[in-house]
Image (cartoon, rainbow, N blue to C red; front, side, top):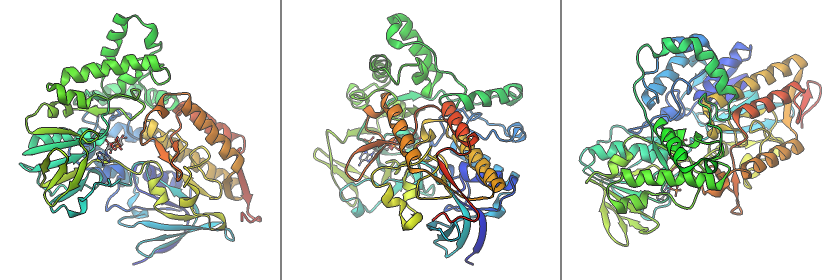
Length: 537
Ligand code: NA7
C-alpha cells in the first residue's frame, strides 16, 4: 500500500551511506526513513554479485568505524573481502541497529520537489508513496547506474546479455561461448573467474588498464584479537590520511632514487598488492618522470606475466600516467590471459561491426556467443542523482543544472537545492578514497549540521553560489596540479558541450575533513541559513 509520511529526513539508498545515515539521525533524535530500489540492503554490494566481485581496500578498513562494539564482533575472513561477505556484513549492520523498520525496499525515488512555502521536500516514488521531509539526503552511490555500451546490433542478440552490476547468478556459464566487454576493475575480476568455466571466452578490450596482483589471503582467526588494541588508532590514522586508509605513502621521489634502489622499492610495493604500487613514492601522481618509472615497471611485469607476446602487447597500457585511471586489482586475470580458451580482441585495432543473433562480428572474424557479458561500468558520480527528477528552488531541475558538469559546495550541497545533501557527491574525495571513511565523514557532518540547525531554530540551509564556485575552482585547481586529468577516465564527467570535468576532490581525505569541520565551526561558512519565520524561496 502506498505510504504518505512526514519526516525530518528522507534518505535515498540503503548502502553504506544510507544505513549509517539512518542510524545516526535516529541517534540524534530525528525521524528518518530510507527508500531503496533493491530487494535488500547493501547498495553496490547488493547489485554487484558477479563472479570475482571483491573489494580492493583491506576489509578491516573498508568497514564502519562508528561503533567499537561492531568492530569487536565482526571477523573478516580475508584481507580483501569478497562481495558475499561485505553484503552479509551490511545485512548484519541493518539487523544489529534495527534499521529495517525504517527502510522501504524495492522502491525507487522518482521525483523530489522543493516547496519554498513550507521549506520542505515533497518526494515521490514509483510505488505511489509520498514523503514530506525537511531534508533530502542522497546516499545514492557514485557507481550505481550501469552504463550500457552502444554496440551495433546488440538488441538482435538472441543469447543472454548480463551486465556485471545486474548479475543473474541463475545463468550457467559452464562450457558456454562467452563474449565479454570491458577491462576495468570489474572486467578484470570477472574475466579471471569466467575463464575457468567458459568453453570459449573472447575478451573485447578498448583501453588496457594497469593491474596489480591483489595479494589477497585469508586472515587468521586470531587476527582481530591482535588488531583490537590498535584498531582505534588505525581508524584515526585513516581518517586523517590522504586516501582514507592507514597505509602511508612512502616519502621521496622516484626520479631521485638510483635505478637499483628504485627497482627494489617498486618491487616491494608491487608485492604489497593493489594500490601499493601507487604509494611507492609520494610524487607518482604529480611528476610525469617519476610516474613514467613506475609505469614502465608495471609494463615490464605484464610482459613477464603474459606468455603470448601479442596478448601482452595488447594488454600493455600506453599513453596515460599510471594511476590516472583507476588502478585495477587482479587475482587471476593474467592467468586467464594465458589460457587456451581465452582470446583477446583490441576493439581499437579490430572494431566490432555488429552483433548478430549468436555472434560478435568484427572486420576480421566472427566470435560465437551464447552469452555476452558487459562489464562496461557506470554513469559515475552523477548518474544516480540525475536519474531522479529533483527540482529545487524555482523548479530548477538538477538534471539541467548539471548539464555543464556537476557543481556542488564541498560535494555536499548544491546551490538552488536547499536542505539537500549528497553523501560522497561530486567535489568530495568519494571514489578517490576509502569510500567508507568518506561516507562516515559526510554522515557525521550532515547530522551535526541538522542538530546545529535544530538548536538554532533554523529551518533551511543552502550553499551560497559564490562559495560553491570558489570550491569548484579550488577542486579544479587541485586536480590539475596532478596527473589525473591526463587520462580519459570515468573520474571525468563530460559536459553537454563536450568538455571534461574532473569530478572527485583530490586534495586528500584528512585535509578535506579539516576544511568541512572548519566551515561548520565557523557557523556554516558559505551556506545560507534560514530561520523559522523567514521563507527560503
Ligand atoms: P569501468 O572502470 O568504467 O570499466 C568499464 C570498461 O568497459 C572499460 O574497460 C571500458 O573501456 C569498457 N567499455 C565500455 N564500453 C565499451 C565498448 N563499447 N567496447 C569495449 N569496451 C567498452 O567500470 P568498472 O565496473 O570496471 O569499475 C568501476 C569501479 O567500480 C571501479 O573502479 C571500482 O571503484 C568499483 P574504456 O576504458 O572506456 O576504453
